[in-house]
Image 1 (cartoon, rainbow, N blue to C red):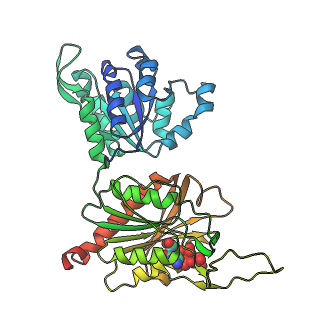
Image 2 (cartoon, rainbow, N blue to C red):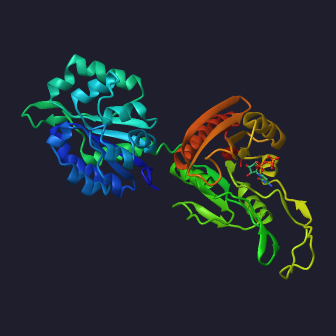
Length: 411
Ligand code: CTP
């Protein structure tokens, strides 16, 4: 699976002759599966038209004016900043690099760079003397120290007739570098089993007990684990969602079926992540025929379902086990109690109920807890949050498996 698949990329175009290569960059990013939105500075428009970039990106181009009410009503600059997984500024001019280094926010692209939590990558392009100037070098050093990634510049003959460093890397190379940056392969050579969605506990042939889980978070976690190069098995209750590319999906209906499917898969798993909203109880009796409304009151007797997460955590040689906790109040305290009660390595907890995130929403936020402490993963789109979570899980799993001399080596 390409690590750029479904990545939301903002391509920020600043004023430089290399801007003529940006349509090809946008096309290559889209070919790799990314969704691309283009933001142009006013100077960029001297080199290439917004119409060209709109045509190749398939999206309206965001122009430099921060106070454009039409553009702001479509997707305002803060929404755009939150939308992005990565902001790739190509070409990045000497002037724009200087403005970033000083934190200026006088047009859309510079404002985005301050407002976004996404990774920022710059691909500088300028005359070689400008690139080698101490001012530019100092500015780039400031950006690098802030965690901004720099691609290039390449050396060679320049549009101005000089030869030296300052050429923007070719679009194919930029796309490959971006893919490599995200294809961290943090979970390469691991098997990850994930549960997702609700379960349906049948009462009779037409009725069941279920809950409001959409499965979106579990599917996002499966996709993120696949992007990190794990072999992913997704055991899913009934949902409308397609199985992510490259993920082995197993569809189940009830908690007992989910339990069985997980037990079949988990013995050689390195990581288990229970995201499913498993029904805690099922009807004792399944009525083979539809129940008719004969009496004024009807009592359905329920019996506890097995706890899949606790069972996995209790295995003799358990995988690194992560549970989810959806809580309406005292999130951290309840989640910590769950961590201990279920004997798991990590709990990812979120608040549900009176807030507009969680179960059915496209966004979520999490607090992750393990025995060492707690960490917040701030609110964002579920796929981005899942990627952030997978990073945290991979770090802890790798640390633990090094301590254990690798589970896999023991098998
Ligand atoms: N879980 C599970 N099997 C169950 C119930 C829950 O694997 N039968 C897993 C869920 O996938 C989730 C975690 O346990 O990872 C937390 O589930 P939750 O229902 O919130 O917690 P409970 O232990 O049921 O506690 P409570 O309902 O009291 O909050």
